[in-house]
Image 1 (spheres, rainbow, N blue to C red):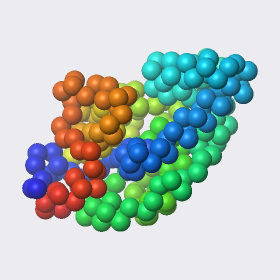
Image 2: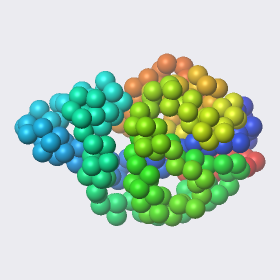
Image 3: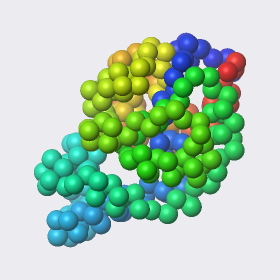
Amino acid sequence: MPIAGGLAQAETWVFDLDNTLYPASSNLFDQIDRRMKEFIVDYLGISEDDARALQKKYFREFGTTLSGMMHNHNVVPGDYLAFVHDIDISLIEPDPALMTALDGLKGRKIIFTNASTSHARRVLVRLGIEDMFDDIFDIVWSDYIPKPDAGIYQRLVADCGLDATRTVMVEDMARNLKPAAELGMTTVWVDTGLDWGRDGVDDGHIHHSTDDLAHWLSELRPY
C-alpha cells in the first residue's frame, strides 16, 4: 500500500520493544511478569497473592511496577532490573520478515522501552535486528520515569534530536501512544489481543493499527 499522511514524511521510527517487535504469543513477557512477582515476594516478605496485587496496583498507578517499588519501598532499580530480566529468550526466534521490513524503512530507528538496554539488546540480537537501530532510549536514560509520562516523550525528542511531526511511534500499549500523538507523532498500535494493551485505544490518538507488524511494514510503498 502507498505510504500516507505522516508516514510519508517520516524521518525517524520509534519502536517499543516487548510484545511489539516480537509476538506476544511467545509469552516472553510472562517470564518477566513472574520475575516481578518473585522479586516483590522476596523483597517485602509477603505472599504471592499480595505481591501480585501490589505489582498490578503499581503498574496502574505509576506506569511500571519498578516505579512504584522505588517510590514506596526504596528499591535499587539496577537490582530489580537485573532480576526481572534474567529470563530465557530462546522462546522468540529470529524474524527474517521483520528484518526485511525494517531494512526497507528509510530514516533513523530508535527503541523506546520501559525495560533496560541490556534486556533490549538481548532481544534484538535474538531477533537478528540489533544492527538496525541507532539508539535505545531505555528506563535508565529516562531516569526511571516510565511511559506514558509525557515529560519522557519530550526528553526523547530533545535528547535524540527528533522532529516529532516527522516521527512515527510503534507500540503495543495504546495508552503509551497518547503523549506521542500530542507531540505530533504519527502513531501505530500493535494489537496483541491482550486486554491491557487496549487501554485507551478509543481515545482518538491511534492513527494506524495492525496485528502483524512485519507484514504491515512490508506493505508500505514506496519505502
